[in-house]
Image 1 (spheres, rainbow, N blue to C red):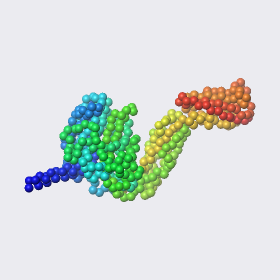
Image 2: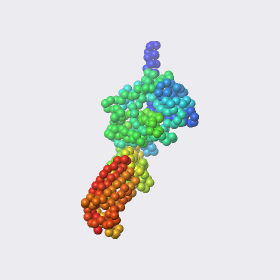
Image 3: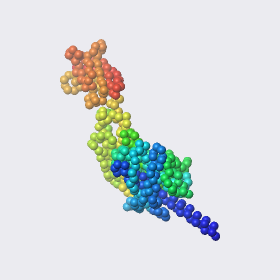
Length: 490
């Protein structure tokens, strides 16, 4: 009888561990510099509302030397608040889905350290029915962030509000995982393999913080992996500049992934945060997202000095009300991409006037978003374009000159000259020589804004006929020669 009671006790404890383990949803750590060597640490812990076990209190957060992995500090974080999150909107709410956020906040002091630090906390276990992982019910989660030397007074980026926690099967989904950085540092987003760490279902909580390296999760190969996180076509992807995730899953189930935000200052990575998250793919009402029918291409090339105007059109097959807006890293002719909203189809345009100062090997970016307003999720479509501004005519200035001119004083084609006069600043050096058919030099200039009115070097009028020219034009220390003929008619 004693053995039976002991067996029941052990069995019930295992069930309790499994019940709690199946309710960890995700989380992240952020750090805010509050002056001197003081920092405010915030840990977001998301879990299923139906969990029968409360949040871990206190929560032992480890702070480690980034280079040596030595434990510098263990911070016992207490629960500041817990909130039931609102999912969906006024006309669509996913059934049987409830998420609670535990907010842990504390203030710590860290000594200056040129190596920087990383912060971590581990907990097992994930939901046992996660579809894209092997043995998820025995797989832990690591909450993780990196910060630079406190002497930099840096605050990490901060993720936006908790995403909606679900996606709709067999239709495009757009998820906002963007972050903000109060220091103005550059942020780069990527999808990374989640950490599983050291914890297991048998030991769900470490007695003390354990250092990196941390093992990563095992994807349910060959169906899933970093190449195909949630299934569907196209596969899940994240915009490295905006943090917008796009996915079109085609299988119902529960999936996990992790978004990493790398923080750069003056081109050097100084820190990172990670949001490990669980999403459920549901059967939603079949609402089609808006579709961009114009522009036709995602990349354009334009010559400095020229302009480019593109029509922007997005339509919604369901006839929903659609809004359109966009941003650009290039100066626009009218200052903005005009927003529009209408039922079924929206129109706008973008016009760009380039100059020599815009020449760059790095493409400029235009980011467009069309959103339909309905009762269903997955209703935002993103369209990204790149525009590369090249040197004018790739240095082929001979295509910018006429092949005939008439110096008769009527004000029309009276001189032989470069047609695109505003491009003079695009060239580092310039030289032109004009010869008659016997090879006698008639005219010479080092000025891109030259103008030959048909007179010789001695000031006499050159006669009607065909003349030969040689031009040399240089851009970025590279000089190219061109030659051709021009006809003078009097």
